[in-house]
Length: 114
Image (cartoon, rainbow, N blue to C red):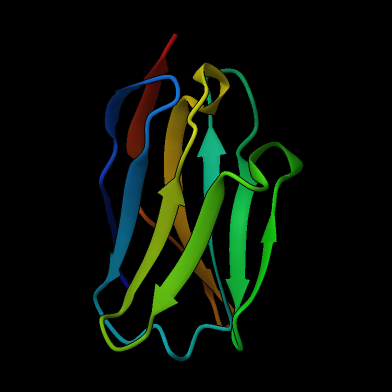
């Protein structure tokens, strides 16, 4: 069983930055896809960014140019660097690891004030 633990969330003013971390209990090397998702009350969880083995990345249009996803297989950690934050980035951010399997973290709250 894999456990994913997110950290780095918090309250920040618009225009600020945060760096989220997702630490895995085991090796993340075997996961082909790792990503970050965001959820706000009353809405479905949505993709923010994913990184595929080999380093290919994909981002939601709303965060392109502002967010950067990266993975450090040696540290079993995935990161999400978030710059130029906007109030609409507010939500609970979840880490995901899949292929094989499909695992989720417990989430970390990000609140961006205007």
